[in-house]
Length: 225
Image (cartoon, rainbow, N blue to C red; front, side, top):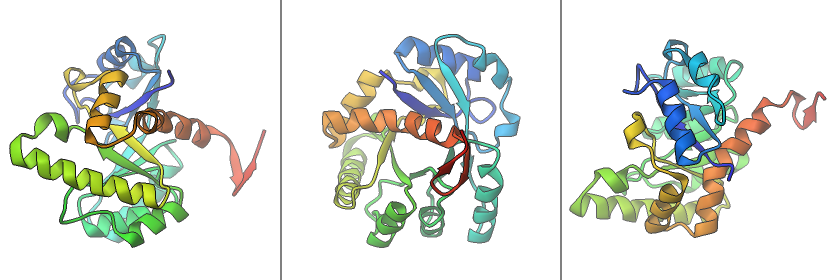
């Protein structure tokens, strides 16, 4: 199966890119996308790229203070990396990311105080931005915190379905010990409220998007062959 996972590696994670790639291959992934906040400082990415049986791509997670800085950072990284992620931490970040077609994946928080708004859903749909669901909360949270997180996730999933948005699931692993096999991650997504086929497609989508971005587009809808 052509499943891809979005991860972070050393120095922003605790495992090297090659260790993560080897683990991902063993677990059954076709590829991984490294999404560090500073991709230029990834420790020896070339070692991971040489590992056979697993595709290793370097993307970028965009962080910045303020909307103007965030827009500028997204624009600067878009020309250098084939996969751009924004992990939303504030309403301003959500608004800016959902309105920027240079963003591939917006990882939205599962928080009842900040559900996916109608304006956000419409902007994401218009700009063809995927909505990310970080499932690590299913493992890390306990008791009432996990219950509230699950309820918020299901509410966001309802909004994604209502506006026919494209979801992507991830465990956001920063260590090879935190990685889950595709089968386990799909099972976690089903517990969270996804349908089985929906979860499988959500785990394939980042790889499809990566392939699409690597094609040579000279203008909107025009590809140089």
